[in-house]
Every structure is written in structure tokens, then in C-alpha cells.
Image (cartoon, rainbow, N blue to C red; front, side):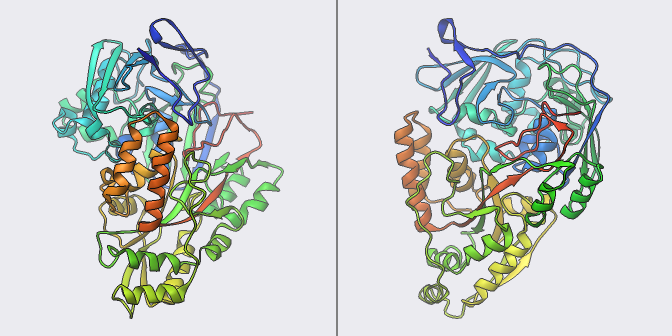
Length: 546
């Protein structure tokens, strides 16, 4: 029997190996006891309304901040502010020698939230794990039939086909079987889509004909309990005094004050109407940094802003057209004007800090004359019309999508391409983009688990065409490399395969990488315990007020 091992970028330094190849946690993750929480409220000025509270359905940090990392837990978790895997609702696990069978030993005594709409009569157990994953895996699952939904990450990562069986061995042991070994599997289970639901709550909702309430009135085991949500206004949470991991919950109330305008967010922070704010404008970073009432932690972002071409729409199905559009974009000017010193030009479909990044790749030079000639060769000497979608929200990977769209629009006009800029409310934007309604799309991505597959598989694989592959690009030579790389634990071989895949990406140009940004997190001076999440969401584990 093979014990759980480091998944390359993930270091399992907090574990020891016990008998029979089982892995045990060294740190204090024991079940806590109900107690008094500090009578303090922490207010977060967030940037957008979540589309819902069912993490399996969504792919953006808006929902992950408001639900996955606030209300829920997963079998395994990423350490607070880091990329290392540590036990979550599974306190230990075993992996078969062939890497296909994972046996999870579940934590005892973990309680689901008690709310006005649900009062659990049992603790968390194997039934909840089975329900969570069977719902995503089996189209005939009762909850999925009662409440039809799509699960983009589960599909994008290939788990819909690779996860073949979930078995309850006893009330606190679950076995998962894969069709083929998958090196990123444990890291994937730490991602938001794998948040564990209450089977008892799901049964209650189905009996009452209200299965869709799963997305409106969430129940989890996490550090905060959902209280209320007023769209475009506030989300309120109560601290979970019964949380199983002691010391994590440090405030009695948590409030998301939804504030789309970054200037208003900044003013609220300075007026102490909120103690944490999302996504400052690059132009405001200096004034925020110099304010003695504030602190401004920052770090290089594990992110990518890019321009996706819908390869199912003509003429974007033509690689020469995509190459022409790519070389007509003045990326240096965009980085200077949009990121204002807080970004660096991107060339690859992943950031330089991701292992297997190919530093040999180079952009085609900015060359409007050559781009125009390439369009003529492709049969479009007079150019063509297309829609260019601009995000309505600010993100670290794109702090001003409207300005970026206008600059790209002007660049393309020089080669005869007439771009009409369009946008939608954020939830609608993402929904329509998943459906492939766009021609060209400004979007971005922050890594979820530290594995290259999280970039190349999620953004560019055939399995992700209905999900986060916004280019709708399914190219077998590329896809075969990504699939093969998942099936080995040999990091050198995986790097070789991912390098080849990046080279194909650069030749085929399904999207134009624009920039990687630095992430800044403005806080009031009295906020303690906050850490920037390398994967993008804003988390309030261990966060308190002095």
C-alpha cells in the first residue's frame, strides 16, 4: 500500500507515516467544543454578488469567497494562505500502489450548521461524502434529478469520466476509485467544487420539493454559518462556535458589503465602514499604502489575464486569423496603461511561478502590418466584424477590462477588424461565456491547486469545452499530452509533456495571454491573521480584529 505523497508543488511536511502506510496529521485539528466567540463583526467590502452558494456549480472567486471557504469544508484542505495539502474532513487517507484507489478515513464529531431552515440530527459521516460526489458523477442521482445543475470544474478536470466509483465502507470510511491514476487528484479534492454537502439536508429539501434551495440557503460544516443574503447589498454570516478546528473562528459576525465601485470600496475602508476590501485600482495603490490607518500586504499573483477567441465562430476557427489578432495587440501598452506597474506581460497559458512553465516561449512581435497581411492571406483583406466582451468587474488579473477592451478595439481597427464591445452583469457574463455566445472574450484565471493541469486542463482541454475552456478549443495533439501527463507521477515526464503542450498552444493561439499581476490586499491596521490566498478567494479563517 502506498501512502499519500507530495503532489509536486504540494509539500506534505506536516505528516508522519504510521503503520500500514497510513498518513497522520501532526497539527491540532481535533474536534472543537462550543464556546463563546468574540463579540466583534468583521466587514468585507466585496466587489460583486455571488450567483449562488453551491460551490460545485461555479468557477469564480466571488462564489468561492462567499460560500466554499466560508460555509463549507472539503475532505482535504489547502493550508491557510498556502498551497500545502492538509487533512480536512478526512483526517487521514491511503492510496493504492497503482494510484487508482483512495481510501479516506473521516473525522468524527464534526457538526453541520444549525440554522432556522435546518436542524441536523446527526454528525457528518460517509453518507455526506457519497452524496456530494455521486451528485456530480451520476446524472441519475436523485438530488441532481430534483435540482438539475452543471458542474464545470468536475467536468473540466476530467473527473466525470475518471472517477468511476464512490463507496461507503463504513460510517467513517469512504473509498474512491479512478479509471486511471491521476497525479493531481488530491489537490483537486481541496478545490471549492469538492465542498461537502449535508445528505440529510438534501433529503429534507427533496422531500419538500425545494431542492434548488441548496443554492440559496446553504448548510455546511465550515467556520461561518449563513444568515442572510440581499443581492447587490449584503451577505451576513454568524461565526460557528462549534467549528471542529479550534482557533479558526475569531469574530462573532462576518458581513460581505457588496460594493462594485472600487472608489467607493476605498472610501468605506478609509472610513472604517469595512475592515477588508477587494481589488484596489492600480492608480490607488500608492495612496492606500501611505495611509497610516491601513496595511497593504501584497504578493506576486498566481494568475493570468487573457483574451480568448471562440474557435467555433468563423473566422476565429482559422489559426491565421487568430495569429493576426494576437500580433495586432500592443501588449506592452496595455500592461503600462491597465496594470500601471502592478503587472508583467504574459506569454504562456500559465504563470512563471508554475512548475513546468516553458521559459523558451516568445510572443510574436507586435506588428500591425504583418497582421494585416496575414488576414489577407486568410481571406479577409478588408477585415471583419466581431464582438469583444469586457468583464464588468475588477479582478487582480484584469483591473480595468473596459479600458483593455478599448485599447484592443483600437489596435484591431488598424488591421481592419471592427470590434463591438459588449458586457453583462458578472453572473450573466460567465454564464453566457460558458455557453459560447462570445466571439472574443476578456477573462482570466487564478490557479486553484498548484498543478499545471489546473491551467492546461481547465482552460484548454477538450473536457473543458463546456466549462472554463472559453476558447471552445478541442485540439487532439494538445489534449493527448495533457491527458497523458495526468497519468504519471514522474515529475520530469509530466514537465516534458506540459512543455510540448505549451508549444502547441503557442502555435495554435486559442487565446492571447495578456498579463500576470501583483495582488494587493488593503486592510485596516486592526485586522490580524489575514493571509492572501494564492488561489484567489478572500478567506476569513484565522482572521480577527484587535
